[in-house]
Length: 318
Image 1 (cartoon, rainbow, N blue to C red):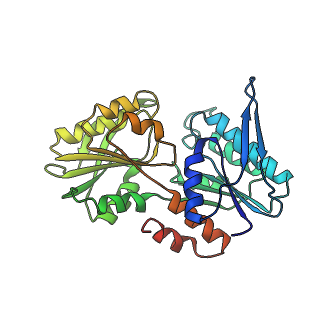
Image 2 (cartoon, helix red, strand yellow):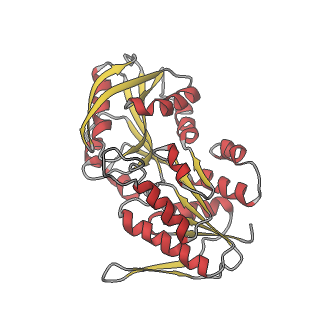
Image 3 (cartoon, rainbow, N blue to C red):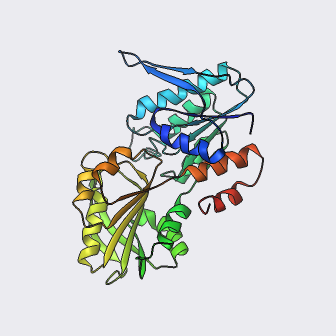
């Protein structure tokens, strides 16, 4: 690992520091400046010649600034003769634009993949992509790791989870719910909903039984929390004893924090793919799990040419 260097960019400084602590190595030195007109200047603070570089940067809000910063960082490393440039993007922005839902729409997730490749990335690592097929948008190695083991391990060792049932907020999340249910040895229920417009969803029916049980709502991301809160209300009306909510990516835009704070959710569990330091202050129900052990295990596996699946399966148990 002496030829490995990890840089934390603007959106993921704290996560990058945790990853370096797991790897027992210092965080790489770099500096990002924003000019008055909005331009970004990224500068390396140490040599990367012949080294394997890892950028840690989620492309959440401000999406375009964070995306541009990692592209500029890749270019800087390419021009400084880095041996490889690995982009760890725990939360992959634009992932919801993975297909043409209507005529004349772009496929922006593919555009972002092309930009990363053209800039000079040699590998991309993501966590729980919104759509698995986005991996196929890359012509370089692309690893999508899952946090379901991490979330499952948390609930598995939580003493007050009695008679659990895992609930998917829609039909599209059934596989995700089944994966978590397998870890917990629990049944699955599905909320049938309709979405009249973007960021607005209305829960209609519940397929499954939650009466007297502990319901765990699982999704890949929570944005404005409208869908989630609607689901929590339905589960309580259907007789659920307690309702927990969990997701990989706590986007929490607009009224999300206030909605969750005023809801009947017992705990809102998410990971630190997106920095939650501000949200935790205003949301007492929030529990944040770190993906640093997963990402550090991946980096070690890549650098030592060892089995990635084996490394990841044991990472969250450390």
